[in-house]
Image 1: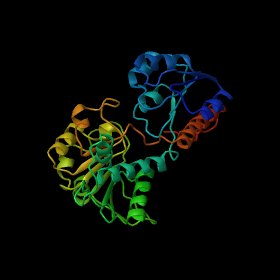
Image 2: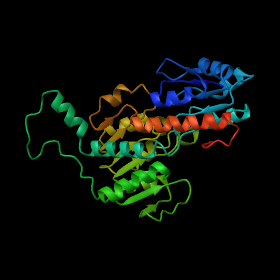
Image 3: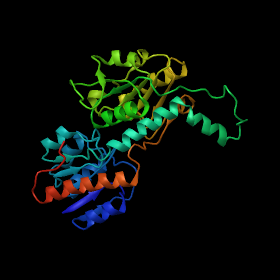
Image 4: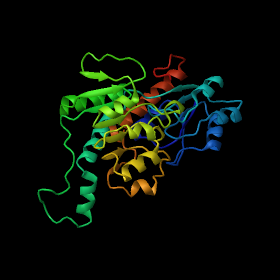
Length: 317
């Protein structure tokens, strides 16, 4: 089978794929555009794509007749793939759930702590040579322990964030989820509406899947419902948050701060956002640990192998 891997992966993953398949490795770190996706669907038996590769409905239509029968996505998020169009074209789609959970939850807590304690500001101060020494009212931030955390999207990652916050920082947990959920091992209270959650929490972590259903879920109205001293943390997809509305709230001091690992026009980050001191900006580091990326890649390869052997796919979406 001829397999396209759309961006370089850890060497252990590439070795595992090459041991089983005729691998074509694309030598570009940027996402594939429409034309490349059309060619990939025509010329390969399967593709291992990842974040941003533009497998939208027109790509499947233009590529017909397709050679490709599987998109083994590298990542748990797959909003860059039109799954309905893929299925209609006879192409299965898989992802890599589970492998990313702890690493992404760790980044959520990193952003939360950095935003609350003004760590990004502090580092910039030191690096600029402007720090004049400790004093009692220097860069006073927000105490985290015991504050209420609100989770939007209580899936694997949301629950992992909640456990870290509750058991590590004694934070009461509230959450909003599209379906009713009971957690036997975690004291958490489900709230009935997004507005209720936005008003109830000191720290709000967005952990929903990306896609049309959640685009601008956190809009101007949702942000307006937040407490003046609250922080918004986004580890989901950039367009889940209306970035212009968030910038306006941060610039006006209507909320205390934010921590972002993803952006609405990624990798472009607006100048208005970059100019603000009360937001922490990370370059999509959610799963950026070698062992995590290896686990994700191996899971994608396992999906490819199952497809090649005619077995049930381990991680269909």
